[in-house]
Image (cartoon, rainbow, N blue to C red; front, side):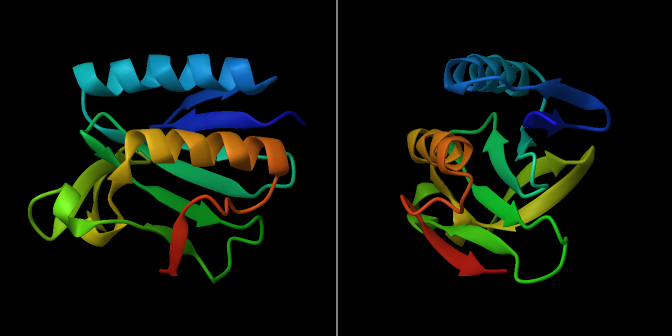
Length: 131
């Protein structure tokens, strides 16, 4: 099965290559900016998934292995990037609070998503915290 992007309650599309991934993420970023910020997940054929926040001035990443068992990982960011204790993204159609300490730049998040797609491993380009 090919990697896929999934978001909301029923959004899903297969991803064939890096250029397609970039195009799809940009389109979803624009959609999130018009509607509400949300998390899109990139599922690999292994079942591992990396989620990325879209639609805010900052992003975040969250990783869940195919087993759906701990440990879970969330990006180690800079709380100065966002005011308050939390940043909210819709996740699976539900508003979800993520710690402000997970906030990273959108460019860093995109680079990590590409790295995940290409290497099929937890990206090393950012820091991680066990969630």
